Each structure stands twice: as structure tokens, then as C-alpha cells.
Image (cartoon, rainbow, N blue to C red):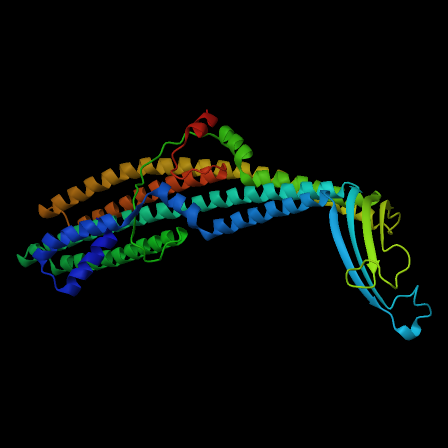
Length: 459
């Protein structure tokens, strides 16, 4: 039964004045129904919930959609543009010398179509840059998903570790209370001094404080998980899982190959280089002439319909077709230095890309070392825990046989508690390192169990 469920059930029992027998009989059935009503999340379900509901990922998705809309906007610049214009002009009669040629009221309406023919590759480069930006934003969305997955997994594992620490603290407290009872019994019959009882009481108090700290850490991790999953802070959620070791046989070379081909930030760095190159082409477009074709139609009148009238001379409408060219020949080096600045920026992002690849190699290697270190610590922790349990058993037996001291028992109990904590820490660190190396390889792996494709990539 979940610790939080049991705690709340006990609180309800106390508040309602339920008798112990009633709590065990009818309250147990209520607890079972309550436990069933509580939502259960394992690691995979937790990650999926975060990917579906977390607002940081939602922000990345909206940014990706905005970049795609910008790409479509840039694509629209290739087509013709249509514009219309309507004007009204009034002339004072006293200043008019010829009423037939100078209208008092003139209404003009026109429509024009302009088609870019050649812009020095400006339109093409702008569109290509917008398309690259859309791909960049899509990769950033995936990078956010991987980062969020890693955060959820680490928090989930920290919660499991905190739960194990609570269990260990409870066991430790129970052992110390038992030892206190034995010591008190020996003291009562004059076989042990009062000092032994006092030492046992102090250790029980310390164990109670440690249990409170462990329970607080567990509550904190629970609230953090609820936050990452966009759930209410006090939501009745049971997170289930274990710190069992998951096999991982990856080595440096295959892990690096997967990272170089899968990491979103490496992909984004490549797109940054391409976008810098497009910026250079946009800057260089000013060295070329700009050609446009246009078709215009207009009509004039002395009324609002803008088509002829009694005071109009000539034809009320006209149209024209033309091609125009514009070429900036000299701007005091403005365009030249813009292109030169673009070259420097290209070199900059290329250097950043190369540095990123070096950092990725270090990142992969450091995560592999973390896995190896944690794996060794687990082996040592398991051995140390077995030895600590045996030492504690022998210390208790010697104390009860009156050939050992209370200090021996308390020391052995403390060593046992530390051995349990060390093993729990090593197991959690191993799985956390596993989550981090999957993130370092650019892999979205909600359950930390390597899939078939990943296994084949590591062969």
C-alpha cells in the first residue's frame, strides 16, 4: 500500500474516532478501494505524460509552428503581388482657368500586379533560410523532448531512491527500538548499566530525526514529479518502479556514432552553418540588379465610380505593361563589408559546430565512465550490505549472550544503515547515468530499456 495512502487513512481514522478493530476490518477495504482509485505511473507512463502535458515542450512546439508559418510566408514572395489604389482630389474653382481640362473633383482608381523576375537570389536565399529555420526549430523541439525526458527520469529515480531511504530509515529505527527494549530489559535486571540505555535512547532519537528528513525528501520528490507532469501538487499519484539494474553494453565508438547522427544540437549546428551561408547570399544580392515586371490599370472620373463624366476630357481608363530594373552601383563599401561580415559569421558557426562535436565526445565518454563507476559500486555495495547484515547479526547475538557491548551493536547497526544507503545510491546513480547517456546520444528512451534499433547500432 502506498505510504501516502496509509498516512491519510490513519489521519481519517483518528479524525473520525474509528476503533482499531474497525480500521482493520472496514478501513482496510476502504484503503483498497482508495488505492485502486489512485492513479499509477511507472517511468514510461510518467515520461509520456510529461511529453503530452508539460508547458516547456508546448512552448517549443509553438515555436516550431511559428517557424513553419514563416517558411510559408517567405514562399509567398515568389508569386506576383496585387495592389489597388483609390484617390480623390478637389480643386478650388477660383484657381481653375479651364473647367474642361482642370476638374474640380477627380476620382481615380487603379490596380497593379508586380512580379519579381530577378532579385540577385535574395528571394530564393530568404526562403531557403526560412526553411532551414523551420528545420532548426523542429530539431529544437526534439531536443526539448529529450531534455524533458531526462529530467523526468532523473526525478523519478530520485523519488525511488528517496522511497528506499525511507524504508531503510524505518528499518533502522525498528532495529534501534528493539535494541533499546533489550538494553532496558538487561538494565532492569541489573545486567547492564544505565549508560547503555541512554546511548540506545539517543540513537533512537537520531533515527527518528533521520526518518523525518527521509520522509520530507520523499514528499519533495513527489511534488516535483507532479509538477513535471503538470499535475496538481497534492495529486494522489503512486509512482511505481524499482532500482533494478538494466543491462547496457555500449562502448565509446558506437555511442559516438549514434550521437553524431541523432543528437538534435549537432543537427541544429549544421543548420546554423547553412543559415549563415544563406545570410551571405542575401547580403551579396545587392551586387546584382533587381528586375520586376508589372501590369497596371487605372480609370478616372468626376464621380465616385471613377469612370468618366461631363467634365472629363479624353479616355477615362488606361493600362500599361512594363519591365523595370534597379541597380545600386556604389554605396561606399556597405554591401562589400556586409558580405565580409557574413564570411566571419560562417567561420564562427563552423568553429562552434566543431567545438560541439568535441564536447559531445567528452559527454559520451564521461557518461560511460559514470555507468562503469556505478556498476562497480553496486557490486561493492551488495557485498558490503551482506557483510554488514552478518556483522549486525553477530553483534546482536554477542550482546544477548553477554559477551558483547551495546556500543558494538549500535556501531554494527549504523554500518548496516550506511551500507543500505550506499547500495541505494549506487543503484540510483547507475540508472541516472543510463538516462543521461541516452540523452547524450540523442535517444528518446522513456523506459531506459534499449530498443532493437539501439542494440543493433551498438553492435
